[in-house]
Image (cartoon, rainbow, N blue to C red; front, side, top):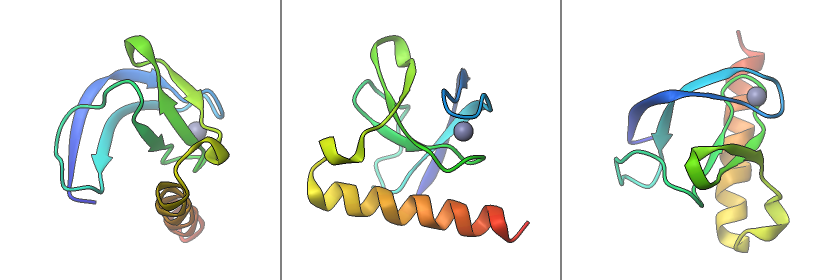
Length: 85
Ligand SMILES: [Zn+2]
């Protein structure tokens, strides 16, 4: 993860956790935009930013196969970090 950006609180549609920060693993340090994908730090669900930066659960099968692998790698990393707490 290259950097983090604070933003207005958003609710994870999977677990209800309040998310107020996003991190980029592309090195492109910027606030999230509609169409971006994130991973909830609490439940490790892959989420998509929509219009108005609402969050919805991301269907990984809709992603480019290479990007899907990257997101799955991040999901596993979050799960591993969560399980080690
Ligand atoms: Zn969550």
